[in-house]
Length: 134
Image 1 (cartoon, rainbow, N blue to C red):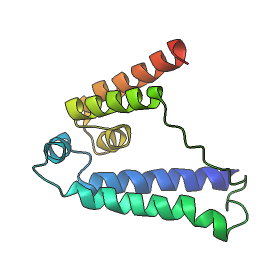
Image 2: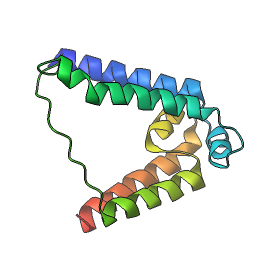
Image 3: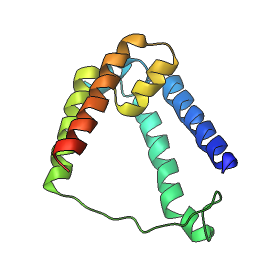
């Protein structure tokens, strides 16, 4: 079990480093991207989408089970009104703050302490959704 935590922690560090290195930890770069002024983050987005597509579509066909135990499960595709509303809220929050959850954590990792307000807002929103709307 400890090796699983080690790999999850290492993966998180690598993910955060990639976001920070790619500029996602700087709200001004993200906002410039969202305003279509600087499209450099498309490379980061494209690379991460490519790795994810390989991981979720081809790895389960090659391996019988995940390397760290457990089993592969079928993905459920659900597109509902709630999903669309949640995506819209997420997009508005991203546009206002210049941060999504992953890049907010990377921002904290590089010392961007003012982003704590945005992170607290994300947790508050998740709590409200889980408490009152699920």
